[in-house]
Each structure stands twice: as C-alpha cells, then as structure tokens.
Amino acid sequence: MILILCVFDIAIVFWILWYEGRIQYEPLLEEEYNILSRMGLPTIPLSETVYNTIIVAIVVNMIVLIIESKKRHKRKYNKSDLTIAFTYFTLIMSCMLWGSFYISSRIHSGIINEDNSLFRFPIWIFGKELFTSVVTVTRLYLSLCIIHLCVCLFYLYLCIPKRKGL
Image (cartoon, rainbow, N blue to C red):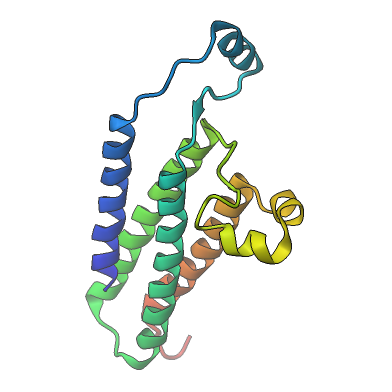
C-alpha cells in the first residue's frame, strides 16, 4: 500500500506541474508589479484547485499511513518494509519541501473563503472572521505537514527491526 501512495504522490506532483503549465495569468499592471517586486512579495496567485489537491493528498496520505501503522503491529518483520518506508519518507519530505516553496512563492488571497468547497463547512460552523483569523493558507499547510511528518516517523520506527537483548 505504501508503494501505491508513492505512485499517488508522484502522480499529483506531475498533475500540478501539468495544470500550472496550462494556466495563463493576466499580467499585473506595471505599478502593481513594481510595488510587489520591490517588497519582495510574490506576483503569481495560488490556484485554489492546486491548493485543495495538496491538502487532500496530505490528509489521504496520513489516513493511509495510520491504517498501515495499525496493520504493521500485527505483521512479522520483512526486510523490504524498512526500504519501502524510507523511500516513502524521502519522497514525502521532498514533496512537502517543494510544496512549501510552491505555496510561499504565490499570492494567497481568495483561497480560504466560503466559495472554496474545502472550507465551506468549517466557515459555516465557526464564522468567516473567526475561521480566517486562525486558519491561513500557510498555517494549514505547515500544520498538516508537521502532523504527517510525525506519522511518517512513527511508521518508520515501526519498520525498524526490534532486536532482543537491547
């Protein structure tokens, strides 16, 4: 199942690259561009579709890895488990680093709002002002990445063979 997650994550990265390659952005006005570039701020907007895909992919990865961790307790040690887990860990860390650079290089306006289907329900429950003051694009991404990192490290720990007498 972990190998399927690796293929799933690689497919998402290629889809994002393909999707971004097809988007044509309207150029900023020269004045806006000069202001943003002088301040060192990004000039390209973050796509809601790409952001939602990244967030859902991280959540799916966490859920599958937690299920696999539960299964891992019941299985005997297999030599390939540690190699597969380490490969997955390396791939996930690469994807999360790429995702953080990708998200930080974009303008975040308009992503977390009631029109975005991913956030419609939480905004309806907590209210827009409260929800958007606590949850930002970067905070949500980093929080999910840290949780996923912990789950990955725990799974990696489960894959290490236990030696008796230590």
